[in-house]
Image 1 (cartoon, helix red, strand yellow):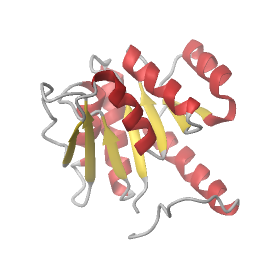
Image 2: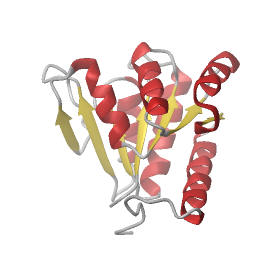
Image 3: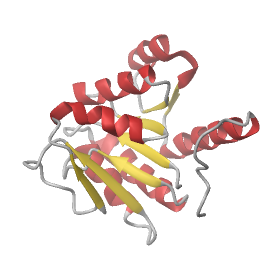
Length: 177
């Protein structure tokens, strides 16, 4: 099983969040990890998928709220849920780690909260000090805050090393590499 990194972020994202998402998507794909997003053709989800498609062997998965939503042309596998915002839980539970690239929308905030509730690691990319403090108060050691896509990848690698050294159970994220 390939390692699945969920990149979450607002549909109406800031320019910096779009740039970070695009770079992050490419870095995820270069590691041959699967990129999972909300799958729509807007904002962070579109930019992350676009970045991943710069890499020939990339795999992008989009979990969409309904058939009415337009799928990003950079999504390889579209999962249409007809679940509306409840699809956020599908995104979170299907990912092994979550990177929140901008916290400007309530959907992204809900995804971070759902991830913490499920005991998933969350990386906040470009969070403000107030956002950082809020989510670290909620999630403690599950939450890391970084300022660059490269730093996000390094946090993921450190967590993988830690999990491996502690003999964590679960699917091997490196199988098939």
